[in-house]
Image 1 (tube, helix red, strand yellow):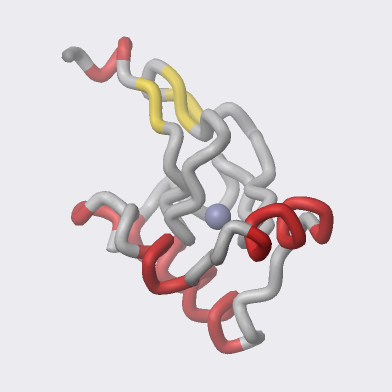
Image 2 (cartoon, rainbow, N blue to C red; image 1 turned 180 degrees about the horizontal axis):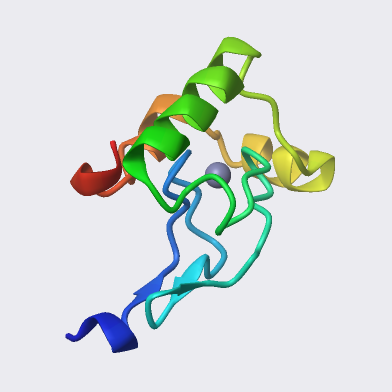
Length: 91
Ligand SMILES: [Zn+2]
């Protein structure tokens, strides 16, 4: 698959996997309902997203969307399990 056709449905920061964050090599400016990161601003470099991730986790890894938090926690949401989705190149 070429870079142009690639769709990334996993948040590079937290591993949330229910939105399209990058499409065809471009950020979609979607705000992650979990970590609140906007694809584009903080996650275009590994350094930037590691900073953001560190900051987010230090602050208790709080959900950006309370509605989504409730839905996910009913399904037994686990932060470490979700973070295991993060592709190796963005860890
Ligand atoms: Zn996220």
